[in-house]
Length: 235
Image 1 (spheres, rainbow, N blue to C red):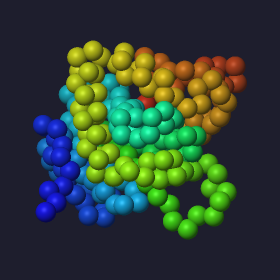
Image 2 (spheres, helix red, strand yellow; image 1 turned 45 degrees about the horizontal axis):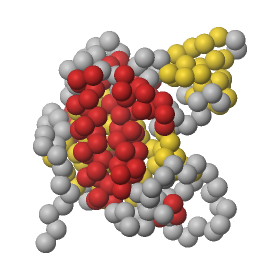
Image 3 (cartoon, rainbow, N blue to C red; image 1 turned 90 degrees about the vertical axis):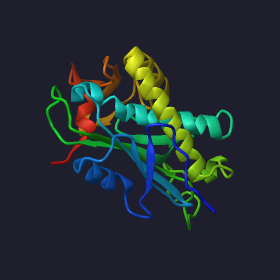
């Protein structure tokens, strides 16, 4: 008899059984559910998961949980996937495996004020395990884990590993601040140094500020796009 995924202490899982875990997590968070609740949908072709957090710091600091969520995904794939599997993170949330988009991370909170303490914060991710009925070359910028040699990896295994890496990352953030996360995310960054468009603004991705905001060079000026700009605001 299946007992479902196993999560670390202080975390508990809720299977949304096909419903969107991110939307469910936002709803549960607004109703005051326990921090550390992981809502998930582990289907054979894709894994979706979200966690409810209650950070006791200003939103500008708590927003680091969004890039940390992506780093935990990379850590889990690094631990369970083929050796040397290249996994990179896009600042706006896309997860790239071997160059192709294979998923994304996202976050939401209840307040727009970056200097205030949020009542709750939800971060989550989606990873595509398999795509159906694809002809070669149909989506050259997209991929799935099955195509990248992860055929032995199950969604539940990845979910469990992600939760452990996330908890470890949160503990390290609480103890050591943003330095370790900043260094790790920078090493996984996709597009740094390149020209592109971020949050609708064209320019060159110069690097990250101390809170992992994107430094964008545009029209001869350097501007900051803070991580809080990536969070969805839910009333």
